[in-house]
Amino acid sequence: MNQILIITAHPSSTNLTKAIANIYQTEKEKKGDKVEIIDLYTDKQMPFLAFETHRDLAKKDEVRNYHQTKIKQADKIFKSVKKIAQ
Image (cartoon, rainbow, N blue to C red; front, top):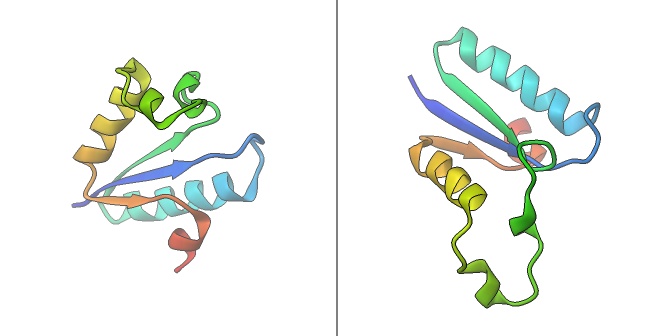
């Protein structure tokens, strides 16, 4: 069993990216894999997406730490529709 993390980022809840991710999740879970989808536009507010300098990225942020933990736990990560479709 794989633990798969899919990261999407699209402002519309009815976008193609989300639809493909949901279909992929359903099919992989039928085969026994665990799949989690994180949508950066809807999963908590993402203030860390805005920064003025690269130094700002080094600041501790609860939301960023949450997502970094999810990424470290994943066996596979899909970050775009192109990767899912391949």
